[in-house]
Image (tube, rainbow, N blue to C red; front, top):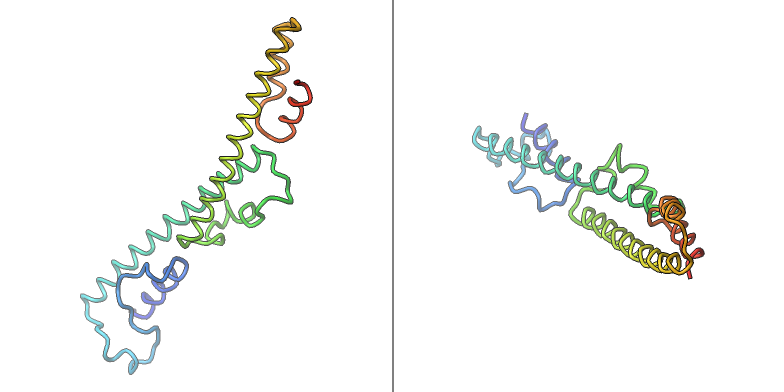
Length: 174
């Protein structure tokens, strides 16, 4: 029973980082001689179960975190109109169905957070540029006396912050 629990704990912990385990583990073996000097008391087994539950909860929390980050990144890819060649294929492929394949260590999560942050910054930069271009166009509309329904039609057709929309607005503007 000890061996199975230790093996399960080691398996989950190996997907995170080594420092996540806060209890000294006996060697994973069925050889009684190699674990003879190890504390195999009921109290140790209870601590081992508690540690397994803690590690499992951390593993589950990180899977959820990675899945949420992957979903946000995929949505940003779509919103920004990122070309297929520039997508992180692993995020697209595993983000929803198998997020643990993207990695669950703190470094893996930090990498995803950094990627998301860069995409959010790009979105904000593009939104700002699109708004600036639309303000410029609106100044021209006033000078040219463009009708309100034509303005609304143009703005409705050119929403978002993907590259194509910004280029279309830019080509229309000054």
